[in-house]
Amino acid sequence: MTSSTIKNVTYKNLGWDSAADLYLPPNFDESRKYPAIVSTHPIGSCKEQTSGNIYASALAREGFVVIAFDASFQGASGGSPRFIEDPAIRVSDIRFAIDYVVTLPYVDAERIGAIGVCGGGAYTIHAAMTDHRIKALASITGVNFGRLIREGFSNFDPVGALQAMGKQRTAEAQGAERNVINYLPASVEEGRKNGITDIDVLEATDYYKTPRGQKPHGATSGLFSFNSAAVAWDAFHHAEVLLTQPLMVVIGDKPGGFGAYRDGWEIYGRAASKTKHIVVAEGWSHYDLYDQPEPVALALSRIAPFFKENL
Image (tube, rainbow, N blue to C red):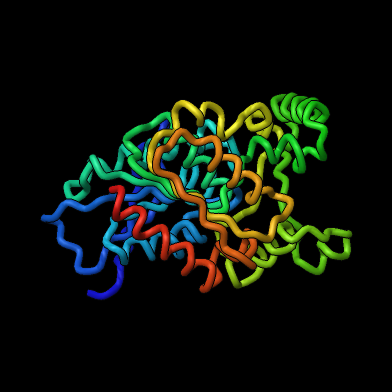
């Protein structure tokens, strides 16, 4: 065969099952041992968007076994209540994905890599600090969700946001309906009508709310009352000491409100990794790196050799 094969799999997480797509290389031979890569999707996304259909499929074609999974409480994975975005659990999901792939007879447990897009890129960075089974990692336009929720997502009033989240969680515990927020407007036109000019919000809407990237499980939703878990979290905490594996950071040079450009330079500077690279896609934005052929090809032209050299 000349293209990768996708297998739908499930495996145990904490108290529920995780759903994932396993991308197998062309001419896959179960008797061989392959390096494996865990691919983590953005916030409000799912395994069928960018982490799977773009990056996992491309890396599988380069000879890697790649697993793209749905976060707990999201997509086709289990967990209740739905739409929790808890960074600690998102990082734990990566560890459980590794637990699964190292049981596969055709995966070399000593050659495990990790890649993530947007929020998934920063979760991947944090996971690598605390799980050194990850031997090399790449962050694609990675966003530190803790910083973002303390800043733009809380209107730069994190304490006020925490107070509102606490009140809402109490109300829900007492029987009120869950407050599931949508991170994006319904359309680009609606966003512009409401005065939104930020490139990241508008381009995210163009990706998630149109046939370009829309998928049934790509809900772009978050449970407001549980977002408090992210407010005091920092994806890059202890990177100067614990992030020692080879690292590649890919960012576009058209910065937007989600902050991938600044976060990319920050983690590149702070990481203790002796081998680290930053790739700046000139003239491209955060969401261009999700699926646009030219910047994605640029990213992959660096990422694939990086993983081949370090796994």
